[in-house]
Image (tube, rainbow over all chains, first blue to last red; front, top):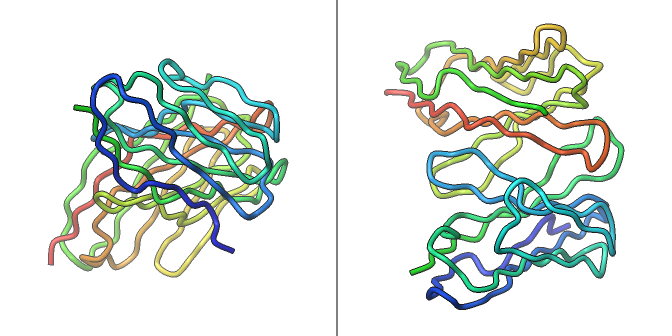
Amino acid sequence: NAGVTQTPKFRILKIGQSMTLQCTQDMNHNYMYWYRQDPGMGLKLIYYSVGAGITDKGEVPNGYNVSRSTTEDFPLRLELAAPSQTSVYFCASIPAGLAGSEQFFGPGTRLTVL
Amino acid sequence: KQEVTQIPAALSVPEGENLVLNCSFTDSAIYNLQWFRQDPGKGLTSLLLIQSSQREQTSGRLNASLDKSSGRSTLYIAASQPGDSATYLCAGRDSGGYQKVTFGIGTKLQVIP
């Protein structure tokens, strides 16, 4: 299993540009999450999904959109990039309803908006 | 709303010392608690997970405990090494809804040779 994969690893955007951060997991996990981590801070939840076709907002959803057409993929879309979106973005997944199951993380995407 | 706090924010110790990192949470109805390690510029590596029904978990030199009644978890690192230098994050997972995971901001550990 590859686990959780994210692309790209790095990206520089200009203000106003758009992009999609890709996230794929091959563990058949129901729950998937997008977090952002600003320097010296913890992780904040952007969006989450409890299964294909079901998504909802987390703590900091403004400026982002998501979709979940398959169990494996959970892309994060940035529209009209702003400097405040400069951050490291992590995708994660959990199998449903198992207290002994870990949250698995992708390697992250480091995004800079100039 | 679950809140997770980690104290201290930073810690510097000489090599070989045993140390304890603290994590506190406000909602005792926690499903599990997971400890992660994060190296600078890197992703999160899972260290230990404690289910709500468990009191502790061990892996090598690491031991994590969970006390739901007091809202605390500790990560004990024995015989610290310079390679242990990293930021350590704890995260509490809810049982209901979308199984929200709430993170602390971490303890930055430096082990001095």
